[in-house]
Amino acid sequence: MAKRKFESKIRVQYHETDAMGIVHHSNYVRYFEAARTEMMRQCGYSYDEMEKAGVWMPVLSVNVSYKMPAVYDEILTLCCWVERLKGASIELGYEVRGADGRLCAAGNSSHGFTDKKLRPLRMKRQAPELYAFFKGLEKAEAE
Image (spheres, rainbow, N blue to C red):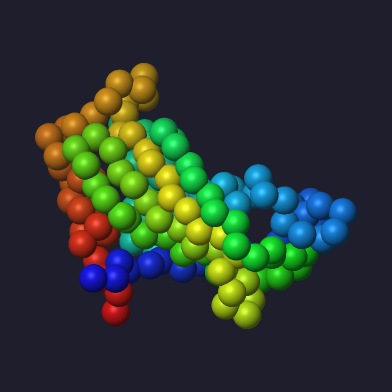
């Protein structure tokens, strides 16, 4: 079963590149964050709303596998999807594709669900609406 991937576009800015005009490796983590934020926005639930509801999503880990370089001024397609939802954490998958469709980078991130003081939250019990939101994304299949 293929997961539903949420797409957004971003243009590579000059300050994101090195002297060769290639995207510096550190920026892919930022692209993942942009993809994650846009996925939630496309589904009608923003980070701002989540935090106002008392739920934070700190990063526990990030993994990036670099495939092909992206370059200055290129339009990239960022993809994000929910790999796995657990009681107090979530794992997301990512792809960054170049204008020609080539895979530039792929990876994943793991996030905990906490309150503002970074105490773990059991989502199903403490934020059932948000848990249902992420559960729906976890089950979403490619169209």
